[in-house]
Length: 630
Image 1 (cartoon, rainbow, N blue to C red):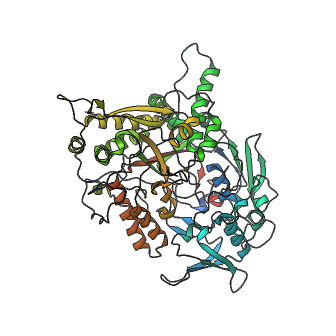
Image 2 (cartoon, rainbow, N blue to C red; image 1 turned 90 degrees about the horizontal axis):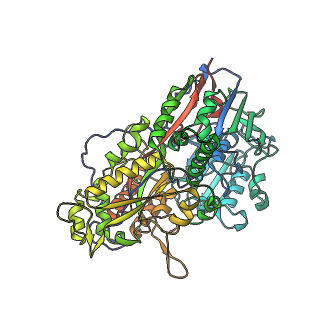
């Protein structure tokens, strides 16, 4: 399971306009057939060398950087972070693992077999055959009771559990033992195509059955786990989590004796690698939020303060959840000092330093995260579908990908899908559905005329000027914004960049609708029909009749797109399900909700001699294989 979060360190442009009419719910339209397009660079999601356990020696300690010791290891609690998910995958079962194309496959450490009832047979029943050797760390076998308790906790009927990540569990009618203690039968109340994404991570019934226990932060080592490693130390104050080999682990013996996860802010990671205090360190933020060196005579403490401020902004903004309620947690840091302006030159210097560190390899790849420019269809000129449609067509995605990714040594691969990453099964470039690129004609038709000799278009004496909300302190966002602004200027559209720190990005801007355009990233996952629906769902009126956007920050949608997502979520045939999602993607291009730009970059520094580590792409580490070379 990936923690599904909204990240503001990347960009997306989606506009709202139908192809034919301009109503909120245009009639059915066929998905245009794919058309030949010029060859584009392709993205590779993840960069980890092939696992070869025979090349990894037994023993040793790994030192792995975290943003901070997470508040909980329960990824279904509101306080969970990406670091919660990383640690959970070392400690708890996930019944399926994604492959290099994000296809979910059974993990034989936990599943001896699995089968869903034939398509069309009602009710849908999935029969899991649990690995008979799989046990919790207290010796209790993993069983139907664990799956059932998690289903109850996450399905929503008992509000005392207060879970915010119940996708799919509410489709389950019952969980019951099968023919023997190792068989589990899960019966669904309605067809659910994304059933493989459930029960990952899976927690013991002892942690999920009682709402009081479920709501308690999961941070101590005395509670059952069932991974290759066990929790030995959880020191939030000291910034360290230590995992050791689990004595009851039944699978391949973990190679490393111990893994020390160390809280290391991004701005300190290059130093820590250089000083041999880390072996594995994500470096995306360390490079992207690098700040210029302090001028001669400036105090070292002032420079450190600026660097820490930039890192705090990026980290907090990146963890802002994709719901309006996220504004409460994000605003907690509203009083933090604003980060310094993005400095692409400083980012380039930081990257060169990372590449030159002795004994360190920088793994770089496209992340499983889709960067978009989102248009606020409820505000100003963008309420006009013709203007939104023109903006979509004015975006040169190849140019933007080049500006964002080439400086990091990554292929300038533009995205053509709202829902899939470039090497994810199901990806297809549907950008042709937006129509031919002729933004000037559409803007003329909308009444926005360009002065003789060029310049910004006007209508009724008002200029066509839009604000672009970007995360402050991000060099990648700055390069992206510059490329967008230059491209729009060519069509007579003025863009004013509005950098916002983490404390104000969500609460004061995003949730409040205070933007015309905004740069966002959405995770690419194996179940977009369920996982991404909220980002594109048609806003519904609240009790006062005011449209509530939920996670749809374009603030526009259609009933047809909602139906396509819902049909895809219930379609058991994979080819048919992907066809429905392609239809939904094409309609999003036609609607002008947003423009996919590129996959967010991912950089990871790994010490020479460490095998099985890098940029993990769609998946997560197979911790028992990570270790030191022989």
